[in-house]
Image (cartoon, rainbow, N blue to C red; front, side, top):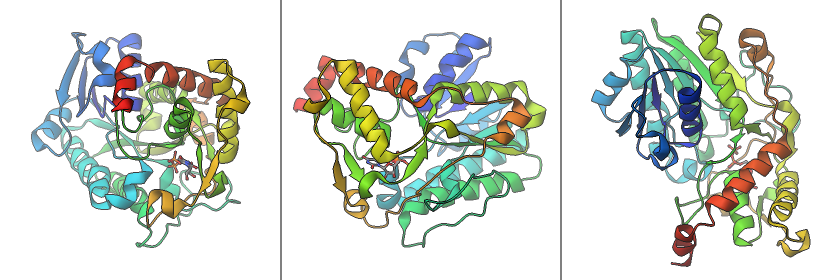
Length: 343
Ligand code: UDP
């Protein structure tokens, strides 16, 4: 099989699981490899440093019978400042790969996003894969550059004759190796879990955008990997379908997430919770830039994944937050990281 975006957060967990649970060979494509370094010497792994901008790599990827595409720019802080690059990465590149897979007959498992459900209101209900109406902000609201590109890629794949496709819409996957720590292994604003973890490790206040009233359902990356295996095992049911992958039991407001993460971090580090700085409210446009808007609630219907491929996420929120925070605190306390922070 081929995994595009194999060196990223989800890709690194998927590679590990594929090597543990199967005897398949993996063509692993990414621009970075530090998260999968321990697997690069495995004779079943061939790593290619590059991306889908290169047409010859696209052709090579499409020679594998199963292709999982995880490659994307998916950090909200970049949707406003780099909209054109975000659209190329989330529409042009996947469309090119889809064309090649349609020709070769490969099964393309494409990672889209729960953000295609658009600017959902605080009182919006269950988001169903095949019936939800989609509402986006205006073109001036560049936050939606990512969502519109992802949506177009989905429509393109569904419209291609001969393509065997499955679309996955992740609902806020979290776990070890998610995103980066600004100033150490990335720049800008990572997604909420990494950003709150960074603030806690550095002893800085957590920033609550517009009061942290938005709600999300956080899903353990380990559940997400189990979902991928459910579709590997049920190709006939999975082909030609888009699936929400989320955990409705883990719905929480961002303000509440900040409170729980603070509590867990204090416990993990054995420090009194009062020693941790309180959260600070920031304005969304000032924090992220002009064009920022938000989805206020993202609640997945998960009935389809259970009915068609027998998948149901089961990891409770507190468990995945504890695992992620413990990993983050350990990973970013090495002397290398501390030196970078001091520079
Ligand atoms: N958020 C926040 N502080 C941060 C980062 C994010 O309050 O430091 C909020 C953000 O405004 C959104 C939610 O947390 O309401 C989730 O943001 P994230 O960037 O993780 O991705 P999204 O779910 O919006 O795609």
